[in-house]
Image (tube, rainbow, N blue to C red; front, side, top):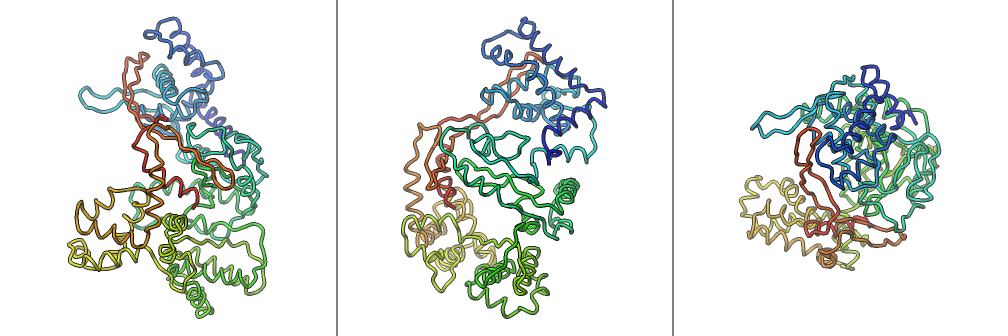
Length: 538
């Protein structure tokens, strides 16, 4: 497990660089030389804020900076100077604001020009950016392996329990229990118990991993190249974990939703990754469990919008030929796994299969419940009625019936499947407070736009009321929004703003524009409050 860590990756970087005459020690000494020259007044005009940052660069920090610079050079290859600044800055472990880290990265990178890389100035009048060309060569396989140290796989060993926000997860790497940048760190209560429960669950790989993942036939050439390179490392990791049990490190996002860490193996990954996982602890399935297995089989076949009982009947009717229907399934990998689990259950054998269910338009569903909108709750399948509704179909049908002469539908040849697909996107984005997507599709001040909102209100009146109520809580003077969830966990959502600032680099006689994010009160993020609050519940 530790072989995938940044610690090991840095050791490999050191060996790779020194084998090509690019010593970390030489680069570290160059950084300390830069510090000395600046403090002597030989690099530009000293000023307090820069001096404060420069004085933080100790021998240990210089070593870390040199490794980060070489790591970035290997990982990014030929790229823009701004990209190099951002990547190095993200690895600087100093208690200073993000823009100061970017400045430090820029100054050091500029002074060390000509060592492991060359900084190339743009042609005069070209309007291009400065670029960086590495002098270190690396095989594709090594590059992919090193890049994955940012996405550690699950652990075969017992993970550390979280007893504070900094000490859980991998034993060899210290990290924070909330994902994202430093803005998300806070001292409010965090529900560490949930993370520990999730981390205690053991998984194993299924036979699905013996078959390499297939790329979508419609993928672009660039995507095909990226996929082929990623598969090299994915195959390695899957082979390494093929016969072992393991558990995932879990963390919160700022809203309080939980995410499993990892890339090649991940609980919340794509269909291939989901089909590659099952619980290590197998259980005998009772009659209720068999029913849910049947529902899961039908879901993956493509019947996820049918009534529960109709899904069960589909499996009962086709029991003898379920395997033969795999090629017709919407999700063939997940379908065949569900069928295999069902066959085990029929024989009374234990299974570790993971049944997955999706909600019905979960955002407006939860919002209608909060408002006690009984009509909306029926249309969003909360009340357990005999009819299974689909919000996207309902809104599309109602809107279509009231605007049959619309050119929008004629352009789609009045094909209702296409109509539903067009209407679905603005429905989804509307509950993220988007006004632009409905206008983009239906036009501004048009009968189609009016009918869209009328149909939406018919089925989601309560959800829209909740949305207005939460939106009204926005305060333009706050740079963070905080609320406590029922389990005591704190949702802590900083308000950020993207700025363009100038970084003066006397080390190279340069001045560049650098885009960065700051925590700052502003109205631009007001639309995020409602989806953040509801996303916490979903």
